[in-house]
Image 1: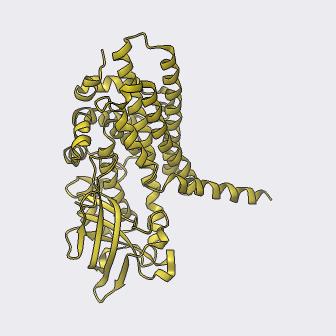
Image 2 (image 1 turned 90 degrees about the vertical axis):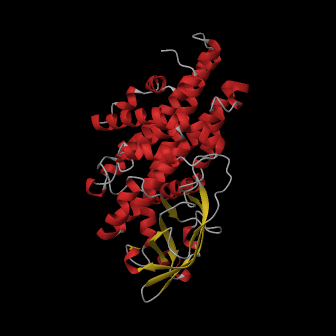
Image 3 (image 1 turned 90 degrees about the horizontal axis):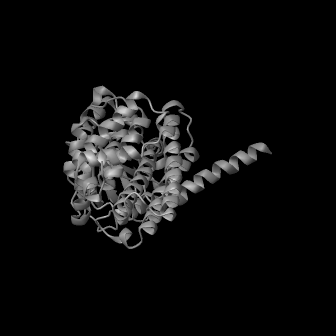
Length: 407
């Protein structure tokens, strides 16, 4: 089948055929039959419902509602959750391969998609059965949108410095403060908000709550204008003496830090999968463009550059799959091990996009080719879910600790 860029974006058969060329047996051999089936299902849905909308969502800054609804209708939003909550009970590897597929079709849609899981997962690991039944099914079928409220104007990676405060009341807590750079914050129905009950206690004062976006005292700001991920929204959240019922506490008062750390394992799998997916999208778009320009006689310099990219993408995919498998099998997975995956795979997404733009020269700058969108989308993955500088810090701490154990 002849592949061109227009067909790649609008013809599901052409899209699936092109991306099938990029599957690597060296990575696929470690996938179960079920995980490969999840990939095939996701790719098919993406080819019909996600990829054809991606360029327009980016150009018009339109929220990826229809794309996310299609993924939810296919049962893909609840992969790592049990069936009694509306999930399918699949592995983290299955989730990673699905995330890669969605991102290859539209990175912005993947950001909204993964935020649904990021909002549901803290409820799953720390919420009561009542909270799980009340909120998780709606997040998994996308009848409700979720947000994770951690970052503040003066407290990004240093979560212990947050100033949003939960003051005890007779009924529960009164929540006051501000969050920023919150994905889907302007339309969130369910917000996992982290606040301090006592700033002097630093980490030991952080507490997690489930907050509804429609409650009095809860307001979402206007979405920011951004460089990339334009089919998702990013906004501020404001809490003005919002009343939080006692039953909406996640875990125990003062134990919110453990909820944060338990959640970032999943969120960093998401970001890593985005990095691999963006790299693969940049590679596929470059390959299709070169075929349009040169037919089957692509110049050697470009073939060599593509060979380097292919190897790096395979390395990233193997790291993603193996780390996700480690999360499935080893409860002792460390922040540094997760950090290696997140930092390496998101750096891959950006670096592959830069290289793809270099290979294509002036064509790499054209919006309809899509490589420049990959480049813009890739940059933010290096920043959120713990900046890559923070990941290097975590990795370095583990290395230093290991050296001390040798002495």
